[in-house]
Image (cartoon, rainbow, N blue to C red):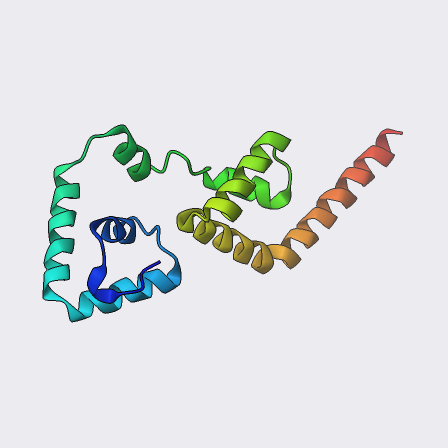
Length: 139
């Protein structure tokens, strides 16, 4: 947690660039950046270093979000249809790790689900009715 705006560490700036801070910490870092030329210079330097490409396994892992489940898995998690082990992992990733990238994806999926719900229900009803009708005809 960022408490002293004048003491924003290099690690905190890196986490800020990776969008890995809480909302409150992000706000504090942005306030500190507005107030400090030295901190903005340090941030630019860090961005340049990242642009040159750090090629450690950890850096590549974070950049490529290799721990993040794909959007399709997030949708399946939302529906509760994943294998139990994968369901547990995605729950851990969202609830314990609190990955902001995946939480944003999940919020978008939930919004789409709310928006499409009446249409989806109508489509499912039509499919069910047409399938039930086809089954009755075969009997």
